[in-house]
Image 1: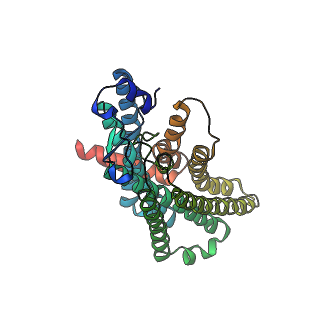
Image 2 (image 1 turned 30 degrees about the vertical axis):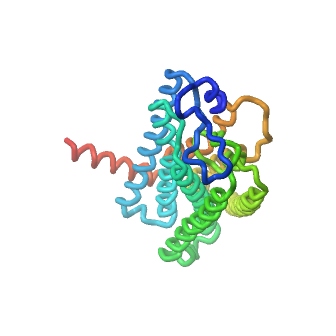
Image 3 (image 1 turned 135 degrees about the vertical axis):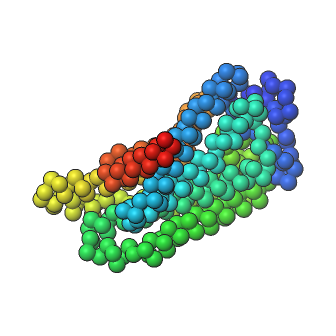
Length: 331
């Protein structure tokens, strides 16, 4: 497993020529981190990412279609789940196709505008997903702790406003980060130490003190993220307190069957993200960093549909009906 800088010293192609610009306006393209330097391993990376991408497309596509077509799933919980699947599809489509194309065509280049688009879309979708998962925790809290007020607190208009707030907050957050990041003077080359354009590796290319503005924005974002984490934890503390008071085993099962998938998705999303961004810097090879990035950027979108469909009987029934309809129409 090699860094781009290592490959550049051994590969004579045009993609291996690192630019040494004096400022960001001189950069026309960036070089993404390569997974391997041999053709066989590049193709292995392509097929591996293709499998993950197709799994995410199939799983999230089925969930979106099932929820949209089955009127029994037109409830707040499934409305938010539909939004989550759309965000997952968007986030994995932002990073994986370009990485696959680079491995397939034996290149590492991404245009300046393409890099900016990746940063904007990735921050936008991941931020919106965090806010949406927080809203989904509130949905479970109201459903279990205040069931008599569920229809009032989570009516159709309120759900639309909450989802719009999650998308809008993510969009605003992404605008601020993208504009600030690409206004920096990038004068330490154009090799991004990641397989897609991400803010922390881009900050390493800056040699001016203006990067402190972006660090400040990152601190604010992490503070908001921590606030969402605290809200989710407090919500589930209250949920478990109520559930433990339920006398019947059937009531326990019903409550946990709706809460466990969301809690698993939150744990996967936040756990991998926190480990990726807050782990101490190491002197080891880039292999660990790549594995961690794959865990938080690729695995959740591919695994979330499986998590939500495993213990949710209503969703499993809707998916079965959808598959049966598709199969019988083709016969």
